[in-house]
Image 1: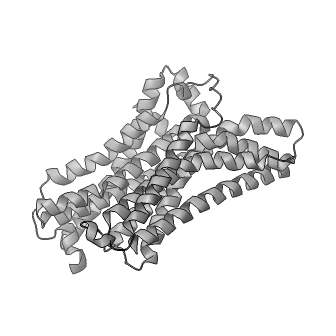
Image 2 (image 1 turned 30 degrees about the vertical axis):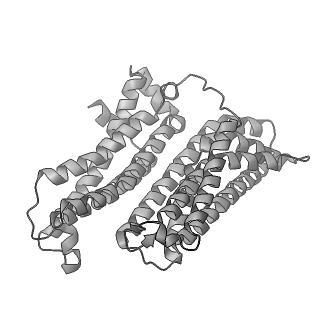
Image 3 (image 1 turned 90 degrees about the vertical axis):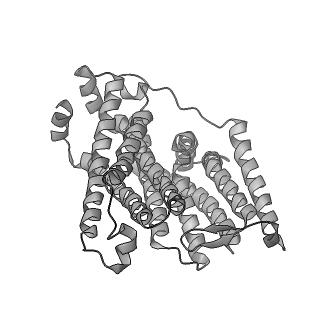
Length: 378
C-alpha cells in the first residue's frame, strides 16, 4: 500500500522512465513466446538454441532497468530523502525500486502474452502460424514459466544496481577515481591483438578445410570458427577499451595551453570516462554487428534484426540514464561555475566539444568492429 501511495504522486518524468522498461519487457516476452511457439512443433534439440538466443534480449532488459534505477537517487534526491525520513533504510529503498521495476515489466509481459493468445485464436495468418504454434495445444505452465523470467531478471538487476551509500541522502559521495590501472588498459589491448591475429589466421587461404564452419542463425550463413572467435574477442577488447580511450581523448583535449572551453571539456571528459564506462560502446557494437550483416547481403531475418535493435535500444537507454546520472551529480559544480561568472555559452560549447570527442572514439571503435565483422562474414 505504501508503494501504491507513492505511485499516485508520480509525474510525467517518472512515467517516461518506466514506459521504456515496459516496452522492452513486452518485446523480450514476444521473443520468448515466439521461441515457445516454434518449440511446440519442433523437437527439443531445435528449440533449445532458440531459447538461448533470447538471453541477450533478457540481459539487455536487466541492464536497462539497472541503469535506470541507478540514476534515480541522483535525479530525485528529494524522493530518497522523503523515503528515508519515513523510516525506510537503504535495503527497503532498493526493494521498493525493484518491486516498481518488476511490476512495470510484468505489465509489459502480460501485454505480450495477451497478444500471443489472441493471435493463437485463429486470428494470425499462415505466415505466423509456425511462430505461435497455431493448432497445437499450449501447456499453461510453459508461458507462465518463461514470462516469469522477465520481471525476475529486471527486479534482481534493479536491486543489485543501486548501491547502499547512493541511496542515503545527506552523505557525501566518494570522489570518483581518475585514470585507469595499467592492467585495465593492458587486458583490452591484449584481447584486441589476440583477436585480430586469430581472425587473420581464420581468414588465410585454405582455412575452410581446417574444421567445421559455424552455421549462424537468421540466414547469416556459415563462418569459420577461428574467424568468428577472433572477431568476438576483438569486439570484447574494443568494448573494454572504449572507456580508457575516452579518458585519453579528454586528456588530449586539455594539452598544449588549452583555452577555457577545451580545459573544461577535457577535464570533465577525463573525469567521467570511468563512470561512463563502456555503456555507449554497446550501442556502437550493436550497430556495427547489424551493419556487417547487412553489408554482406545475407538478409538477416526479422527476429535477428529485432534482437539487435532491442539490444541496441536498451544500450542507448542505459547510456542515456548514465549520462543523466552524471549530469545530476555534476550539477553542483556547474552551478558553482555559473555563480563565479562563467558564461552559459562557454558551458554549452564545452559540452559540445566533450560530446564530439566521445562520439569520435565510439565511431573509431565501432567502425573497426564493423570492418572486422564484414571480413569474418565474407
